[in-house]
Image 1 (cartoon, helix red, strand yellow):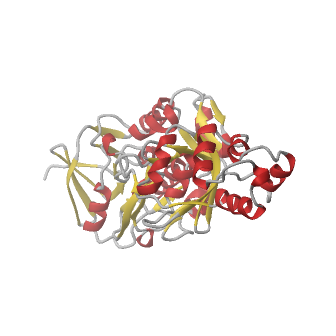
Image 2 (tube, rainbow, N blue to C red):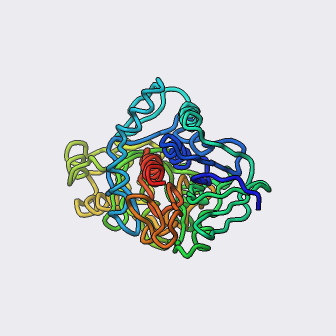
Length: 392
């Protein structure tokens, strides 16, 4: 076989793959970065409404889901949000902080892609786009990869092709297939950071499509306070996307529609304005359409002054823990990321290399490490890509 040789072959020209390739190349390694897509960083380009929420200053390992909650600590500790921000600033990319530590480009997400492509160019990385890897073998300490009909070899192979979320961008479970072929286990992948669907009696809330309100949502012991958005299919918005990563099918989620209301607020409202109604009391705190829908469900007619305190307290209790049982989610098509993936039990937390297959690495979304909404998954991509790139 007349194959071209490299020190490392990185499959996947997304956030993690480009970071890994640039890091290894800058260390003098000869790196091939390949992707079946016709341009790099497609997921970066659509992120953050086209402005790329490229990291979060509050990054910590406890804001990631994984089969091993400690796995992400090493990589995240060695490549921090401040490290990536330093790179962004070296390229003169203007940025701003939004709520909850989220950092965005002032301009376009394309600035981040162009920065990473330039980093790869300066590091001498060879990039092959628009060609799929069709055959992968491993023997005599070398990985042999066929890409677009051409053969390449390298002692290191990096799986950076992500998960199956947002298939319209070409996302697949390719990394899982390769991992299984080499004896690595895969935690069942599922959609994460994804809107919920509602059915049955709860479908009534579909009439609220487009209404948004700040709520506290909980599932078991996990809680998030952010905006929730009603859609024609169910529930979305940051609060719902966050809790979706933890949610398990056929289990309820609880929503506190009034996280700032103190105990007995309805009793106090009754005392202050006995001729007010529940609908009016709710409309003072919530969007009118949502207030109407909740009041209709609670079915407390007439003036507050004529409603028993016990009934008002029962209404308060339901408003602060309104139970929804989603019928499902909108699936990988609308999921921002994939939860699950290549099990971290078989990987080194320091280098991201597979213990059973020396030279095989897995990084980014392909791995069973899933961050919260708000730049955490990009920071994992940068940190895990950097860890592998320094180890190759």
